[in-house]
Length: 105
Ligand SMILES: [Zn+2]
Image 1 (cartoon, helix red, strand yellow):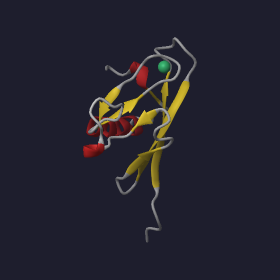
Image 2 (cartoon, rainbow, N blue to C red; image 1 turned 60 degrees about the horizontal axis):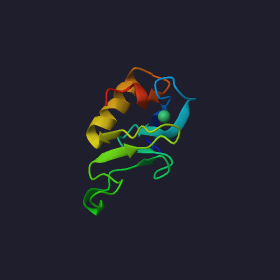
Image 3 (cartoon, rainbow, N blue to C red; image 1 turned 120 degrees about the vertical axis):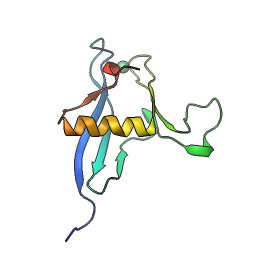
């Protein structure tokens, strides 16, 4: 019997600007065993995809997560499907965290 939602893993998402500044935690991605997921601190250091409600030219993406590191000027924008693929890969590889500044975009 399954009782409630069980978490498969948590993945802290950080920025270090490739080692240029102190490790900065932006959010924690959470993957649940039923395949759903979420991220903490929405709208603080990242904006989730907002679909049709996204205003043109606003910081909110329609299909993308947009991260904004407060310690450097990095503002990576990542397609929703691509982002969760990355999170799952990191989870399978048992990475302790994901450093956005080391990703190739
Ligand atoms: Zn940064």
